[in-house]
Length: 306
Image 1: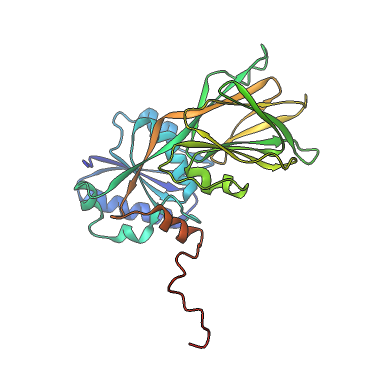
Image 2 (image 1 turned 90 degrees about the vertical axis):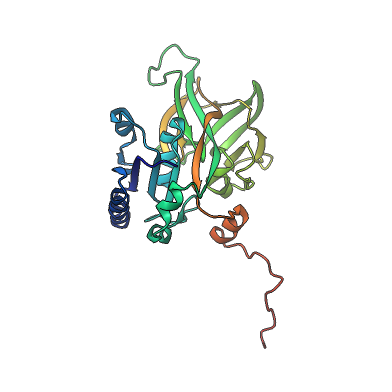
């Protein structure tokens, strides 16, 4: 991979991420590579300005933070086909990231320049908002947004315990009406995130499919379902005239919708490009490590006297 320009995106309000960003910047510049560094976070979203002001896009985005920092980068960079190399610096689980100790390897950037890595392409979701009403200018049809993990819907009310009723249409057919705390529409990448907490299945990222899973449904018949990646989903709030539903993308609030409005979701046209440094990557090894699975018990000594 040619490395003429690298963007270093690091988690805002993280001293460790800022320190590693400075270290990586010095390393890259010593190799004659131009570097642009910027923070990323809920209150420091620099991607719109970076993309608008840059005459030349980077060959690589180096992302230093947790999974949230990676998700934010993917939402903005995937449509520009910019590969993401991420390291868990200042994050928690780091399901999507490499171990930060690799940053200290003297051969890291030589490996990248010599193409000693793999690109894992991950499916994303594309959402857009619409309205059956002629009023309500807050909802603009064609307002498109993206998510690598999930797009989910939660009731938005301050005065009472929030629940909502949502109708789900798949390819124009009404499939179910969910009443409960909300609804998650997830990618395989997001199957180990919020969707997993609702009892949804874990999908290998090599599978292209969409998970629909209710959040604390009031009916035991409301079960998670998996539909083909080519499906078109429409989510509609129903039944409560004054109730509003908040739409979230990868845990970041996007918009409020109400009865008469809807959110359309489908597979995004572009894929997130994740740089993988492991020579023999294993998704199951990642699950075992991150989710603390037992793995093989064949060689475990169960005799306490030995």
